[in-house]
Image (cartoon, rainbow, N blue to C red; front, side):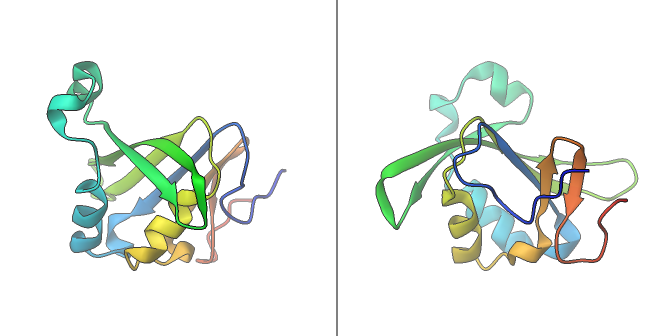
Length: 124
């Protein structure tokens, strides 16, 4: 099994899930407030509840990643904040940390399925 310890810079795609129970609603609101204005969004993405956020890397003035972010409401109550990008250069972890979201609360998407980081929940 391939193990990923966190966000991987310069990969072709990246994704994450953060259980809402592990973060504050204010942190979710802070992230979503950075999304593109709804009138600038693709209407098809809005219908699906997806929002676009452009994430600048404060250490690299050239890099800017386009992410889709959304909140998934699950029937079992395990709601989560999710995000994905086609090209990750490391800006999203810095943004999450700047909002006070601990990176060990983030579940990373891997080729073999979801990987839990820092919570002792890694699937075997």
